[in-house]
Picture: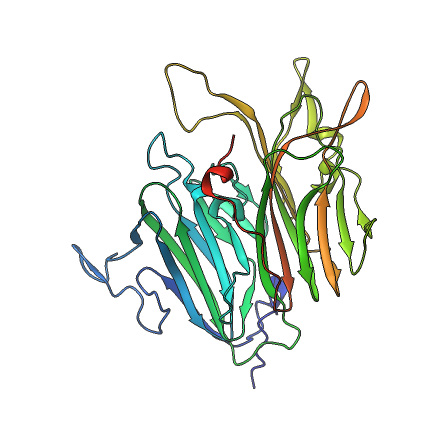
Length: 371
């Protein structure tokens, strides 16, 4: 007898025949039906790329990418889309909202601008090479987070962009099982932003989480608004009734993302920050230029933008009752430590037993746009 276990994975487990039924949803097989992939016809004939993508998603429209009956586990998601529809409308990746619903729930367990979910903030794509999130040229968005569902999975994309978004490509790979283990947690992700943080008041990455689960990752899109070094703020995890002080408090922002000494090297007498991608920690994006448009009457300078990820895959943060996560805004210069005000956006990723608490209202698209 083959024992079905959806969470036996990894290289060492590949020889184990664990069972399950492999399926995939895309524009040609939107229900993931067995033996019905690639049936659409093109000018080349039947089953020759007749429907490789959604033709367009109109302004205000919500496209359903998948509705899957369970039990099952989504194993991989691939998406690609344009990042602008005109020079005036160049923040598609912040204007498209990705949502995921499990087991018929009315409020989403995942709600995030599309780009930020895949560690590409600021409405810009960048190369990301990590274990659960991979972004390949050009804007090939991949997620390998296991996303279990007992009864049903629903994934949507809402177009809050001014114009129609053409040629939305996607595929969702999943496996169906007879049952899921009793202690299975459900995947969650939540985007937040504070365009101007308050001095001496920690930015809230996540709050209002009730129940049992584990925190498994953070994406940070930081726009620095003050000079000097910005990364002395500590990441804090308030667990199971913590009030004034957290159980886990880090030692600095660059430390939380696995770097050290300001990510800096010296080149020609200047201090230069180094970007990097590793399986669990990364700093894939830095820019202080707007390379999305050209204008004959102003240059492309903009506030420095930095994107980071930190995956708690080897060190998940467990909670039994509740969870709150915050990040300080503290800098340092020749005069010492100082309180800062910056523009901070984040995606928090975690698993928990359902039901989940209501998310804060997602801000409108213009509030989400980068500076």
